[in-house]
Amino acid sequence: MIRSKLIAFICILVLTIFLMQPTTNSAADNPVWRIVCLSEKKPCYVAANIKTGSGSVVSIFTIKKQKVKLRTINLASLQVPLGYHIPSGIKVIFKNSKIIRAKLIECNSKGCRAIFPLEAEHLAAMHKGDEVKILLTDTKTRKKLVLKYSLKGFSKTWANFDKPSRHQL
View 1 (cartoon, rainbow, N blue to C red):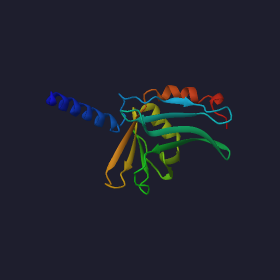
View 2: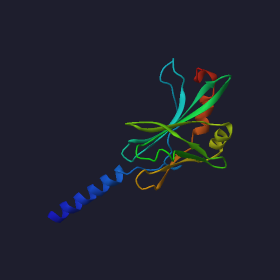
View 3: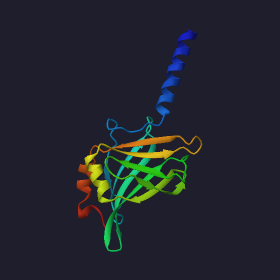
View 4: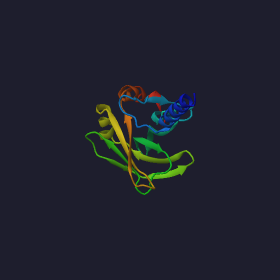
Protein backbone atom coordinates (compact mmCIF):
# COMPACT_ATOMS: atom_id res chain seq x y z
CA MET A 1 0.00 0.00 0.00
CA ILE A 2 2.73 2.45 0.98
CA ARG A 3 4.78 1.44 -2.06
CA SER A 4 1.90 2.15 -4.50
CA LYS A 5 1.30 5.56 -2.88
CA LEU A 6 5.00 6.34 -3.19
CA ILE A 7 4.99 5.34 -6.87
CA ALA A 8 1.88 7.47 -7.50
CA PHE A 9 3.51 10.43 -5.70
CA ILE A 10 6.71 10.10 -7.77
CA CYS A 11 4.70 9.91 -11.01
CA ILE A 12 2.75 13.06 -10.10
CA LEU A 13 5.98 14.83 -9.11
CA VAL A 14 7.71 13.91 -12.39
CA LEU A 15 4.66 14.98 -14.42
CA THR A 16 4.47 18.31 -12.54
CA ILE A 17 8.17 19.00 -13.12
CA PHE A 18 7.81 18.12 -16.81
CA LEU A 19 4.82 20.45 -17.27
CA MET A 20 6.60 23.34 -15.55
CA GLN A 21 9.66 23.19 -17.83
CA PRO A 22 9.79 25.88 -20.49
CA THR A 23 9.58 24.45 -23.96
CA THR A 24 11.09 25.74 -27.13
CA ASN A 25 8.79 25.78 -30.06
CA SER A 26 9.52 23.79 -33.14
CA ALA A 27 7.56 23.49 -36.35
CA ALA A 28 5.54 20.69 -34.73
CA ASP A 29 4.55 22.89 -31.76
CA ASN A 30 3.26 25.53 -34.16
CA PRO A 31 2.64 28.85 -32.41
CA VAL A 32 -0.35 30.49 -33.96
CA TRP A 33 0.50 33.62 -35.91
CA ARG A 34 -2.50 35.89 -35.58
CA ILE A 35 -3.61 39.43 -36.24
CA VAL A 36 -4.31 41.39 -33.07
CA CYS A 37 -6.45 44.54 -33.12
CA LEU A 38 -6.97 46.03 -29.66
CA SER A 39 -9.10 48.99 -30.69
CA GLU A 40 -10.02 51.05 -33.71
CA LYS A 41 -7.73 53.86 -32.52
CA LYS A 42 -4.62 51.65 -32.29
CA PRO A 43 -2.99 49.91 -35.24
CA CYS A 44 -3.25 46.14 -35.54
CA TYR A 45 -0.19 43.89 -35.41
CA VAL A 46 0.84 40.30 -36.15
CA ALA A 47 1.81 38.20 -33.13
CA ALA A 48 2.91 34.75 -32.03
CA ASN A 49 4.02 33.45 -28.66
CA ILE A 50 5.85 30.56 -27.07
CA LYS A 51 4.29 28.92 -24.03
CA THR A 52 5.43 26.46 -21.38
CA GLY A 53 3.79 23.07 -21.09
CA SER A 54 1.46 24.58 -18.47
CA GLY A 55 0.36 27.39 -20.81
CA SER A 56 2.37 30.30 -19.38
CA VAL A 57 3.70 32.68 -22.02
CA VAL A 58 7.51 32.63 -22.25
CA SER A 59 8.06 34.92 -25.22
CA ILE A 60 6.00 37.14 -27.53
CA PHE A 61 7.01 38.15 -31.08
CA THR A 62 5.02 41.01 -32.68
CA ILE A 63 5.32 42.92 -35.95
CA LYS A 64 3.53 46.17 -36.73
CA LYS A 65 3.69 48.84 -39.40
CA GLN A 66 5.17 52.12 -38.19
CA LYS A 67 5.32 55.39 -40.08
CA VAL A 68 8.78 56.95 -39.83
CA LYS A 69 9.23 60.26 -41.60
CA LEU A 70 7.98 59.67 -45.14
CA ARG A 71 8.09 55.89 -45.21
CA THR A 72 6.48 52.93 -43.47
CA ILE A 73 8.63 50.29 -41.80
CA ASN A 74 7.88 46.93 -40.23
CA LEU A 75 8.77 47.16 -36.56
CA ALA A 76 9.29 43.93 -34.64
CA SER A 77 9.15 43.52 -30.88
CA LEU A 78 10.31 40.56 -28.83
CA GLN A 79 9.42 40.04 -25.20
CA VAL A 80 11.54 37.49 -23.32
CA PRO A 81 11.55 36.37 -19.66
CA LEU A 82 13.58 38.08 -16.96
CA GLY A 83 16.96 36.59 -16.11
CA TYR A 84 18.80 37.09 -19.37
CA HIS A 85 21.97 39.11 -19.86
CA ILE A 86 20.85 42.56 -20.99
CA PRO A 87 24.17 43.75 -22.52
CA SER A 88 24.25 40.60 -24.70
CA GLY A 89 20.85 41.51 -26.11
CA ILE A 90 18.95 39.13 -28.34
CA LYS A 91 20.08 37.55 -31.58
CA VAL A 92 17.28 36.95 -34.06
CA ILE A 93 18.35 34.29 -36.55
CA PHE A 94 16.58 33.87 -39.91
CA LYS A 95 17.38 31.07 -42.34
CA ASN A 96 19.53 32.37 -45.25
CA SER A 97 19.47 35.95 -43.97
CA LYS A 98 21.49 38.32 -41.81
CA ILE A 99 21.30 37.95 -38.03
CA ILE A 100 19.66 40.82 -36.19
CA ARG A 101 21.33 41.86 -32.94
CA ALA A 102 18.56 43.53 -30.97
CA LYS A 103 19.21 45.38 -27.73
CA LEU A 104 16.88 44.92 -24.79
CA ILE A 105 15.35 48.35 -24.25
CA GLU A 106 13.11 47.89 -21.23
CA CYS A 107 12.34 45.38 -18.51
CA ASN A 108 9.38 45.05 -16.17
CA SER A 109 7.74 42.29 -14.13
CA LYS A 110 6.59 40.53 -17.33
CA GLY A 111 10.07 40.35 -18.85
CA CYS A 112 12.37 42.35 -21.11
CA ARG A 113 11.62 43.73 -24.54
CA ALA A 114 13.65 44.46 -27.65
CA ILE A 115 12.41 46.43 -30.66
CA PHE A 116 14.04 46.39 -34.07
CA PRO A 117 13.17 47.14 -37.72
CA LEU A 118 12.28 44.09 -39.78
CA GLU A 119 13.72 44.67 -43.25
CA ALA A 120 12.24 43.22 -46.46
CA GLU A 121 15.06 40.65 -46.51
CA HIS A 122 13.98 39.33 -43.09
CA LEU A 123 10.31 39.23 -44.03
CA ALA A 124 11.22 37.28 -47.17
CA ALA A 125 13.19 34.83 -45.01
CA MET A 126 10.15 34.45 -42.74
CA HIS A 127 7.97 33.62 -45.75
CA LYS A 128 10.44 31.04 -47.06
CA GLY A 129 11.74 29.57 -43.80
CA ASP A 130 10.29 27.17 -41.30
CA GLU A 131 11.41 28.91 -38.09
CA VAL A 132 13.01 31.98 -36.53
CA LYS A 133 15.48 31.36 -33.71
CA ILE A 134 15.90 33.75 -30.80
CA LEU A 135 19.23 33.41 -28.98
CA LEU A 136 19.51 34.62 -25.37
CA THR A 137 22.28 34.43 -22.75
CA ASP A 138 21.40 33.39 -19.18
CA THR A 139 22.59 36.03 -16.67
CA LYS A 140 23.90 33.59 -14.04
CA THR A 141 25.32 30.72 -16.07
CA ARG A 142 26.10 32.58 -19.33
CA LYS A 143 24.64 29.58 -21.15
CA LYS A 144 22.79 30.19 -24.41
CA LEU A 145 19.07 29.53 -24.72
CA VAL A 146 17.39 29.20 -28.11
CA LEU A 147 13.68 29.97 -28.50
CA LYS A 148 12.20 28.79 -31.78
CA TYR A 149 9.19 30.39 -33.44
CA SER A 150 7.57 28.19 -36.06
CA LEU A 151 6.70 30.07 -39.24
CA LYS A 152 3.89 27.72 -40.17
CA GLY A 153 0.93 29.92 -41.03
CA PHE A 154 2.98 33.13 -41.01
CA SER A 155 2.65 33.86 -44.75
CA LYS A 156 -1.13 33.52 -44.74
CA THR A 157 -1.47 35.71 -41.65
CA TRP A 158 0.90 38.32 -43.09
CA ALA A 159 -1.01 38.41 -46.40
CA ASN A 160 -4.21 39.20 -44.48
CA PHE A 161 -2.42 41.75 -42.29
CA ASP A 162 -0.67 43.50 -45.16
CA LYS A 163 -3.93 45.03 -46.38
CA PRO A 164 -4.29 48.79 -45.79
CA SER A 165 -7.49 48.32 -43.80
CA ARG A 166 -5.61 46.30 -41.15
CA HIS A 167 -3.35 49.06 -39.89
CA GLN A 168 -3.89 52.74 -39.40
CA LEU A 169 -0.78 54.83 -39.63
